[in-house]
Every structure is written in C-alpha cells, then in structure tokens.
Amino acid sequence: MQEERDDARVKPEPRAGTPARGGTPLARLLRTPSRARKAAWWRRHGWFAGVLAAGVVLRSLAMLGYRPALWFPDSYTYVVTVFRPRPDLVRPAGYSMFMKLLEPFHGFWAVTAAQHLLGLATGVIVYATARRAPRWAATLAAVPVLLDAYQVELEHLLVSDTLFLFLVVAAVALSRTERPATVAAIGLLLAAATLTRTVGQPLIVVLAAWYVLRRRVGLAGVLLAAALVPVIAYGGWFYATYHRVGLVGANGAFLYARTMSFADCARMNPPADLRVLCDPRPPESRPPSQEYIWSKDSPLVKLPGITFSKANDDLASRFATLAVTSQPLDYAASVLRELGRTFTWGRPVYPDPEVYAYYQFPATPPGPPGRYPAQVGAEYAKLYEQGAIGTEIVEPYAGWLRGYQSVVRLPGPVLLALLLAPPVAAVVRRVRGPRQAGPPAWLVPWSAAVVLLVVPPAVAEFDYRYVLPAVPLACLAGALIVRPDLRKRSENGKDFGNDIPRNVRL
Image (cartoon, rainbow, N blue to C red; front, side, top):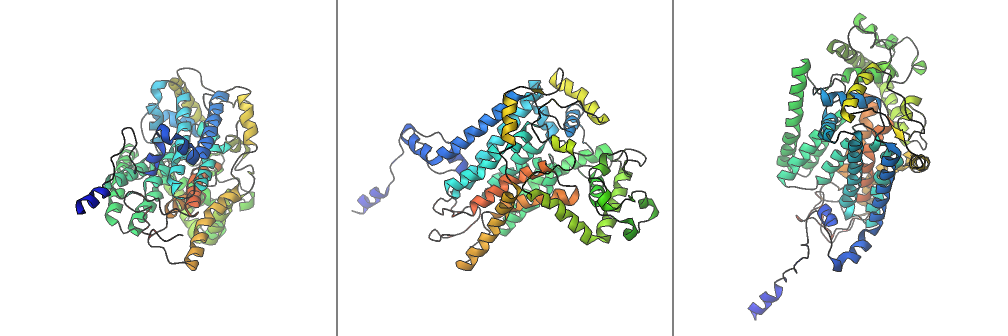
C-alpha cells in the first residue's frame, strides 16, 4: 500500500513537445506555446501583443518616413569616435562602439533599426518583469515605451539614450535573481550603461544597495566587481590619453553651467582667478545653462585653450563648488525648478527652439551642422554611410507620425503620479496590514527612475530626452505596486527579494 501511495505521488512525464514549466517570466513569455495552448496564450497576452504590434507599426513608419535617421549635434561626435577610437572629453565612447558594431552594414539605417528593436525589447522586458501584477497593469506599464511618440522619435535620433535605456531596464529586470553569474551580468550591463552615459554611475550604487538590503552582501560585491572593472579599465584608457582621472573631462564645465542660473559673484566673493567666470547680468536675464558651455560669449569659452582642457575644467569646477557652498538654497531652488519642468502638462519650448526642434518629427529636412566639431564629424559620417548624409522625408508616412506626435505622449503629471504611487501605497498598506518582510518589489525601478530624473537637473540642466529613459522604470514600479499575485513565484520562491508568505496579500 505504501508503494502504491508513493507511486501516486510521482508526477507524470511531460508529453513530447510540451514546454517545461518554470523559468524566468521573460522565458515563459517568449516560449512558443503548443497548438493546444495557443488560444489560452492569446487570452493571457492578447492585449500586450496588440500594443507591441502597434509599436512595430510606429517604428516602421519612422523607418519609412525619415530615411535613414534623424541627426542631433552630438551625433557627429559619436561618429568621429567610431573612426578615431579614443575617449571623448565630453561623452564616453560606449555609444560609438555600438555604432562601430553596425558599421559593416554601411548605413545609418542599421543604427536606427537596431535602436527601434531595442525600444521594442525594452517594452517586452517591462511587461515580462511586471507579470507579478495583473496583466492589465503589466500591459499599461509597457505602453509608454512602446507607443509614446517622443520615445519613437528618440529611437530614430542618432544619440545614446535608447541604448542606455535598454541597458538600464535590462539590469533592473534581472535584479530579482540571486545567481552569482546573473548578478555579474547585471554589473556588466550597468558598466555598459555608464560607458554610454555617465549618469549610469549612481545606478551601480543603487543596485548594489538593493542586494545589501536583501542581506546578500556577497552578491553586492559580485555586482560591484563586475561593474567597476570595465569602468576602471575605461578610466585607465582615458588617463593614458589625457593624463586626467575620470571617464570624461567636462564635469566641471557642466556643473559651472548649472550654477550660472543663480551664481552671484557679489555674494560668492570669488578669488581673482575665478572672477573671470562671473557673469555681471542678473540671473533672470541670463541665457539657459547650456549656453555657458557652447556659446562663444560664455566666460568659460573665452578662456585660453579648448573649453574642456584640464585647466579650464578645474577652474570651472572650483567656481561651481564655491557657488553651491555659498548659495546652497539658491542651488536647491534652481534644481527644483529644472526638475519641475519634467512634470508640466505641456511641452514648453526649452532650452531653446533649436534644441526643442530636434525632438519633433520635422516637416522639412534639417540643415547641415553649424558648429565646427559637427562639420568635422559630418565628413566621418560620409565614410560611415559611404555616401551623402542627411534625412530624406517621405510622405505620407512622415506626416502620419507628425500628426501622431501632436496627440500621443505621456504627460508630465502622469509621470509624477506614477512616481508618487508606490511610496504612498506602501505607507497605506503598512498602516492597514502586517509589515512586509524584506524590501518591496518596486524599490529598484523606482529608485533608478528617481536617480535618472534628478541627476541631470542637478549637475547639468533639464532636457526632454533625459526624461524618457526614466519612464519605463517609473511605469514598472507603478505596476509592481498593483495587487501583486503572490502565487506566481520565481523558481527560488522569491520575487525581487520579498520573503512574503503565500497566504498574505498586499
């Protein structure tokens, strides 16, 4: 009898061709269902499949309507680094290496196509990671990255933000794991993100702190080692090139430009060598911060040598430090004003019409680059394209996208609501029920989103394209707070580190 009961407990072997259960949510989502389960699969994921298909259509219109790509002033600098591999003083070389991988296709169409694929992949990752929430919440979390017109336009620009976005979202999505090899992969993703945009540096600390909160200090060490080794190696390359410590050589210049929105030399009383960087105009009469880096009339640009030389950058850094320490409240108010632009309902023209226009699908082809460095980069771009460069606008596809962009976007107040919802809901649930064991699931994407929104206004200035990489993370955090289904556990019995009994609902 005992043997019969033991035999009854034995699970039947799966039929041939039937996928095994388990695996990560992303693996379960992407697994091809058998014919017997296909209808059920469409019932579960049909809404997301429709959103994803709409995202594919939008990106196809961009490829058809704006051939082969849209250009930004930074684009030309990236192309120079493709052909002259050396660290740039203003931007790390990660995006240039991405473009280098696609050079054999001999066309910028390959870059934009790859970026559109990364955008679609980001939407899939957000949906798969949010599957612990109801499917409608997971689908809504993926909608902005898949359907926002400005996201599609950003993917069609030759700038680093789409690659950066994908790397960060992928790292956050993997942070539920406790496998050392996967944690090391998270570190490598964050290193790649940091070498694509330097704002990725604090995210290494955020993800390492996550494992410390989960009492997995060893895994935090694995993550830090995997992330810092490539970053330090790049820093060594930068030092060998310029004999300067760092990843870029413009941190002081950008912080100086940030402080010029409030710096008052009468209150700062700077020493003689710093006084040359003062602007006698009152703050309300000064131009946007970026003009203090690129305008010929900027006190920094007027200094001898190139703007980002070590001497000039150190001088700018000392001035900025003095401004912040002398006027801390003015600095905080200035940062809050810049950050507040993120959450406005409309999209006011900022910082100037020229930059603002780069984020719109244009009705006429943009003109050739005006700045000398961009003109040099344009010659290298011709080598990359193996022919003339520019943007061909093809109707009616371009017109459809312009009409779409005038209507479909994520308003700033909605983003603010997404950021406020997780902590507010956590407080309410803590008051109403038992305290949750371990850090909450939404903490990593929420923290990463906050960092990506706050750091640029704090060290440079607000820019519309700096907001978009934070949106999928904010949406993911918002989805993870919506009635999590604790029956869907990962293979190790945990979900983002939450040790919650199965019979407890949040």
